[in-house]
Length: 374
Picture 1 (tube, rainbow, N blue to C red):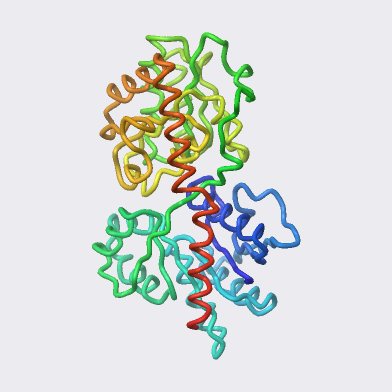
Picture 2: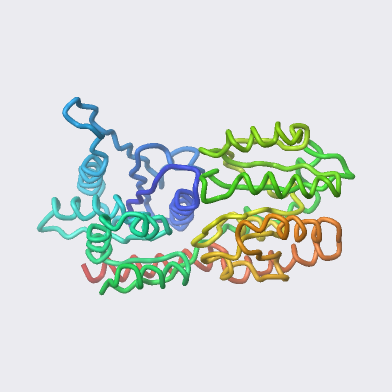
């Protein structure tokens, strides 16, 4: 199949999943065309099976804001025409499914089907501003198929939008051959001494990720045991996190690593991963840590309980309960037997339910069904 994929090329779960989906599909022989404003995250270069088409937005004084939605629709139309695409798969309803709808309309009488995958912000945007409800509902209902990344998001979408369109649940995934325990081989010695424990946080540093809470949790942990904190990623809350680290005199123990592509190498250096978000529709960072055999301490929110089993793969704690999260992290960090048991359980959970070789065929089946009914 020839598949066009559109996502935000940013350091967040949706961009990571869309990119990894394209890479996995290409490895299975499909021709993938990424259509985006920039090279998607974790995509290092184009190849014979993977092409990248940049969306260039006109900068014209008449427009107060660049018309990205229209530029994207035009690029989708051109790529579909020139490359003979079988379908489009867009990640996020707003504005990507609207652009896909316009591209499909421009291609008439040919009908180019498109699939929309909801990642969460699509729904919370409407919760914050009801004026987006009609266009979001319209774009969902005009999609040839709609998927959500968790049962939680599937239910919220049905309740929020009251759509007639079926919303299928296809969970996020991880390549279990890439994300796997390090077997003692990692760069841990670069970051910490043998007597120090290593904590990690991986996100796009948006306010919903509660990055300041990560620093507070580590501060409480650091009072009890020697430890280092790896901050993987970047975003708007990095500055406040760096300020907190200076104020708490933790500069020698907190390492800001910025955006990274090979995050598995860094996760494998950790003893526990912290994810104290206010909301997660799935919790991809937690799954990646579990696949590496690293226990997690997460907020009990959204779709995270569908991934993490409390007391088995790690711990689930009410959001913003910094003291309890620190206590649970210490429970893991100070008990090697529990840490290893949770790591093994997390790896088994990832391996049995969320490996790419189990999830990618679900997308392939969906594509074939959509193409067959166009």
